[in-house]
Length: 388
Image (cartoon, rainbow, N blue to C red; front, side, top):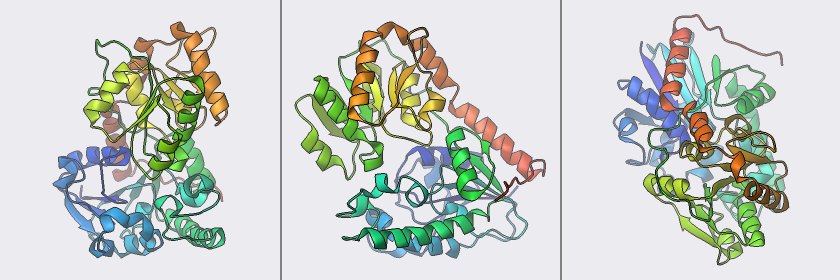
């Protein structure tokens, strides 16, 4: 079977690239189409593919400023030309990859991380209410809200039209499956992303008295809630990550809060093994970090929305669990969650957390995804569309 792979852009190894990596290992002779590629930024399995890029690759400094080119991305993905003899197209998309034009009659399976969140939902979380400065790194200059909204409405309309080019959707969670149905009027198969539970595993090390956040420092991740809550309670907090929110968070942080910037996977694992609990205050489509923490036997305190509700077994007064879910995205509610956690340490089971994480491991993802692709290629899995 001749397969073509499509990805939004290749500028680092995050959750989406880890999903792509499995397909690259399975189909090493496939061509990989993407808007742009920052050489050396991905894993060896991805870097050795035959990578085809769009005209955006020729823009000076594109590897640092690609987000500013959001208005050109629809045209860029449509400019890529797939081979006419391809048997199946597999795209990994949270932005525009799903919009690539596929030869007539060829199945297009989209592994969808989410419909564009900044066009459909959570617009204020991405750009902020005042829309000052550089709009969280997605649009240049001091754009007024009205101009921003006009642009994003055009992007949303393109995204809706382009979504119908996909014949089969795979969602990374039931949360995203519902969003695909709401935005695109399409149904989807749910296959959870891979988590490297062999690497992220428990170790015989003592726990330290601090909480941990591991995240990109962007507005919708809500890391400021963790900073405010820990400062209010006088608890130590270590934040690992980088992004446009770093300066603002540094101004909020006091002596009990440390911002370490990006750290290696080995350092992240070490902190997950040693911290008191992982704090996860944002709303994610799936959220690999909480699963990685549980794989290390670490409890997770997370916001009760999105993927966390599918990956964490919440503890209660009468049941043991792998974490605790708080109901409101406020520092006050997070403070209450931390205090409840500290009053009920015996309600959290490292053994249960490890078992929960293993159910999301890489081997499971690979088996489910490849089996589904075989179904589609064999004509056994029909395209499914909901009523508009």
